[in-house]
Image (cartoon, rainbow, N blue to C red; front, side, top):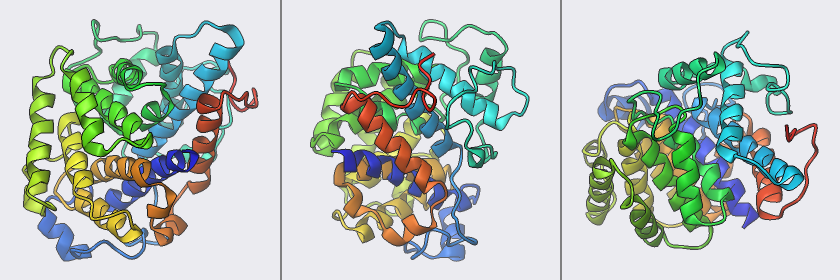
Length: 355
């Protein structure tokens, strides 16, 4: 199973780096004219290597780090509120984006924060920055009853894959991703998309088929208030996938991916219609997820998370991995997340301080 955890996070990073160069191109036709209709042979197709990751992968890594710290604290003290620990991890990410952010030295501890390559601004979402700025300044931690805003942007769903990997069951993954998604995104479609995605990741990495994992997530979603928009988007994704491999027009019928339910729908439609488990099939599915006039890096990243969790490392295009920025960091976080949460191992307290 460890290989699938690694492939889930690497797959997300590959999709992120693949979609980033075309994220702000306004139509699939313009992307196709510039880069072709087929997946590029190299990840650094739009410039020199390495192909850089964005805030999607940065935040995913900090969520993984928060899950490790929460596991360390639970074993050491027996009392822990994991969403608060993950919130502190997100504040560390915020401090990498905003030099001089008002966090204590203790909050800025750990090896991940000291990784200089993460202190790069890669189009961070304004909603994430604004919500975390308020909390760095002393605002209370939001929850579903007290949301920070009415945003349903995709900034919560894009970072929730590690939660699906680490939690013991789908309902726990759903609840954890919901309760950490609302830290920055207060609209139900913003945090419920994160919850649904985490539940799906939990299922497929543990050998459930994607349709079965979605069915299980549907049951959890049905209990939530404000779910109607999400329910419609998931039904639309199934409808598009039932017609076969989607073309760009079909993908764009699901929306631009800028908001949570649309980003999730595009990723589900592309993953449901992947044509096998080979690296070529993986690359083609991620390029389909990128080839639209919307949030291409986020939709491809989510698709990569799902396919990596489903098929493992043998499905990843090895030439793309050679081009990927921070591959070593992604692999270390995946290994440590598995060791800490799945195997229950104690990790270096200087790397992952429990306090």
